[in-house]
Length: 282
Image 1: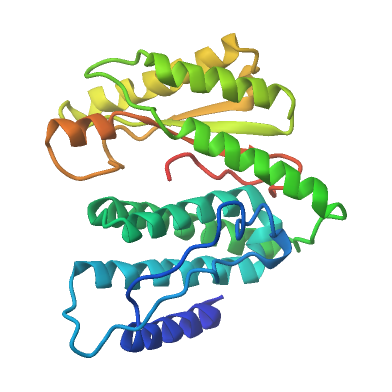
Image 2: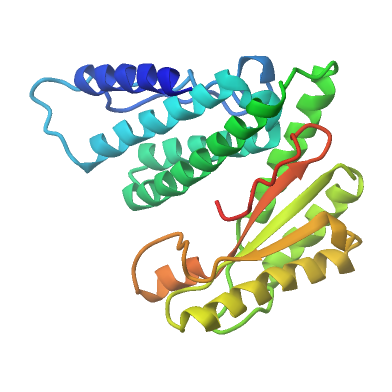
């Protein structure tokens, strides 16, 4: 994998030297891993050249960082992550595509923070993939169509549970809109018993580390409690707390603090993901 990543970084440097400005997107419903799983990539994002007289700004550095994370993800996929951890890969692709949309829309702060999160995700995936491949070989499933269907469901649940997921100050109470998302996700999960969730609680940086650790755990447990009420058994929901240590955004404004008071959700698929924990801290 080291050699592959070196080649990827070299290619990325070439791209950075000769072009990395705006890029085009696949049509909605095309290019996603769940829809073309045998050809997993983000090749549809094409960078146009930077003109010689065009001034370089922060957005160009972020687009270069986006290209590096794309190459890292592509390398992991080629190494076998798509067969060892398909649900984790589809969620990484969701994040990669989200960063691209943020860059296209000029949301540079959002893109910068999501790139940091994506790097953590890919580093964790690389460590787990290296371990699994040292023990066994991951092979494509016999029923690709069934896997594609499962991954569409994974993507739907992931998108559903990672929006409107904020909390009030010093509170673990679920907001009404997110409660609706939990009910909808539970309805889907009841029909897909192979899927389970990792719920990670987060806090802003206004309290002590000990207090924030407990508050974040309470938030994760509250999500689990409502999922239980909606019919999802406890053994399908893992909870974790990272306190204030993984903020979505850096800063102390009220808006930033609100964004950091959240839960993050990862979806596991027992039928396809190799037995390894893809924690919800990403």
